[in-house]
Image (tube, rainbow, N blue to C red; front, side, top):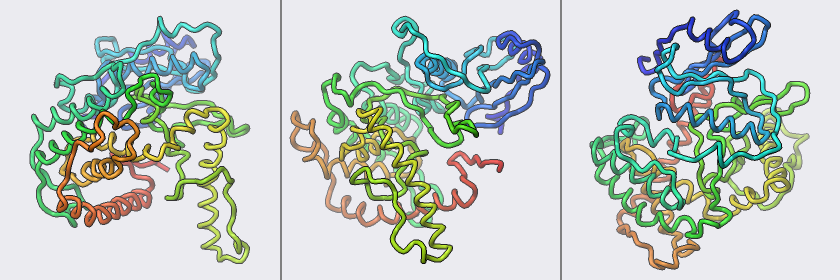
Length: 416
């Protein structure tokens, strides 16, 4: 709790709100919510106007950049007509009258699109605001945080930051619960370093060398598009606001593309066409329990179907990227290579092995037709034997998080 204890001057907060919002003095200010990285306050002005104040916790990194990056992202998106909150005022330093960083923004959005384009003068990219480039002791390490002119440099930087951290702070660890009940014993961080080095050997071939490739283009995407971050009008169901853009990053489209959690495919099988979800034959004669299961599946399939239909009409390039048969293996590997050492060798090892197994299908391997990494038959056999059990434990953990009301990895749970 110490990391989330924020001491600030309430009277100073009220003054800066009144200054930036311009609706008289603050009549009432209350805690609105607690997020993973911010405390959110709701201020009501004398005339009834409402505004939001976000105050980042001490654990929110990178300091200064996290606040400044989110403000720049919101301002840029708003200038393009996206329904995001208007920023009234902000400070990315604690050297102010409040004593903490803060962002004052609109409580209810209304977006207009300007005619002129001043992007080149107003916005820039970098250094990266990705939380894992600044988490913990990484903020003190000399890391390559970009910006990068070649997307493949970004792939290398992801693993190099973990190599530097693991070399300095890594130590032998056992897996977290419940994995340690099935896979007991301590794993060496040096084995993790070897896996990261194998990743570095194949990373240059995960994306095309041509920086002009359309699926290589830099893409800005919301980091956590879940129902709690999308607000709609209860009467028209129009999207009125998309919030929580903190730690947004720009990545190549091949890494950014895919289905947000709000629109994920509920089936393990990829779609073969654009057919709408259908009720199965015999639905009318099913039991109430079976009908309820079918209804829930249809409910989850419908957003997935509509997401694909609208992307096909309005965003063909994005829909093209998920059609790449290697996209999931590539994205999973890059995600695993950026994770902190926690005693888990299974996930990264499996991701690296899968790329090696499909090496003949990698389209940009011409410079190196032979895969530059090797695993022994014993290593491959052990992975194939143990990984299904590991995946079953993942499913079990996800099940119990859902049963506990949607418990997040950080331990947050909805009040309702």
